[in-house]
Length: 336
Figure 1 (cartoon, helix red, strand yellow):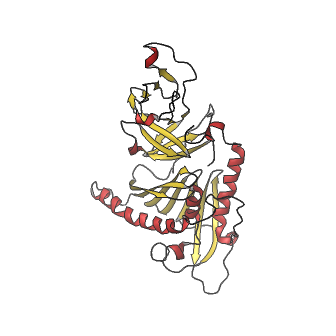
Figure 2: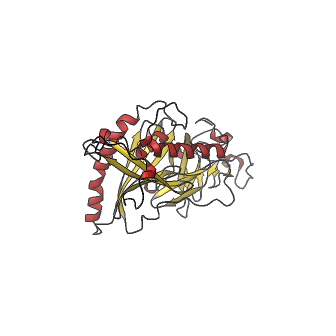
């Protein structure tokens, strides 16, 4: 995983009035809402005796350890040690690492790193998914590294084979391009020009000139993707790293062609089984890839149609090198 990035890690609906313990980015984390409803996140590890804080309870703006009642605020600082008496000062070493959180669009992000910058900016979603869209959603577990799941959604070569009876119908096996168009340093579009193979040579990306079709894929580092099907229909995915061998795919179907309440929700819900079925067609093959994580230089033999994957790997490698060695506390095992 790339340190010093905002990662989508959960759906807002998953965090209610009780602490929630999950594994994300290889760490056990606890999420809870303070008295104002804001989501907070700490490492799920009491600084006293190593108990999971997620088994405790929320008291106002603090989370209380279930073992000895130690309390920690949203910054991770210890606020109360009951055994020492009411009002007793709490030593500074009674602290749990906290992660900045951000909540919007029904999603929860954390900034995964050791020390956030003073000018930390909030993460970006897709600006063209406006409030008039509604959505249905699903969560799907994959026994794969999140980088492999991302690459699958940037892979235009596999469509007629893995999805021969769904989104890859038509046997368009010849891959023209594809065109990768960077929007900024951390997001890019992919334009797809697959065609029937009638003996012609694939056209190179530079031979495909604008205007490009409205349909495209969009990826935003580190783990957000959009399938721009039309102005009124999108599929969005967050590739949530659990650990080095497991990913949760948070999948959403967005639409605004139908806005009548109840009927709108029904259509959104009905659309999800098909989207999950398509994802499972992918999952069946992606979980078999070796090695588990992707890498810029992995010994694979790539072709012209793999250009989006190469672009993703190159930028991912740059971000990892820029971040430097993983911060010490991010290297700790799940038990701390």
